Length: 73
Image (cartoon, rainbow, N blue to C red; front, top):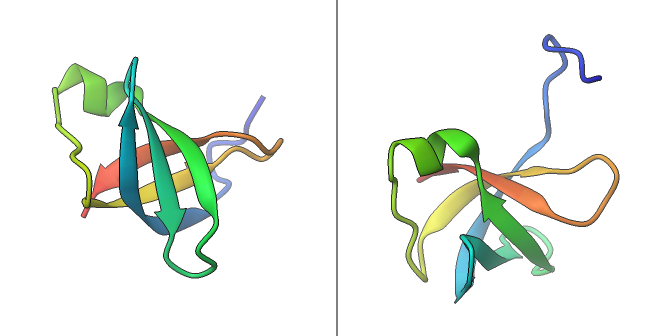
């Protein structure tokens, strides 16, 4: 289980492709690496839309793999 006081690493990225089931491909601003990302639960709940070209904050999964979009900038 994750500690609530622990700060998660947030990375700025730009959405480059929209995939089915609220998945997106995003390109990191710092390294240019492409990441498979998905919308966080709060963004789904409040129906915040993410479009291609939007800048977003991504929380990287500590085990590698996918990232979670937590905020649209």
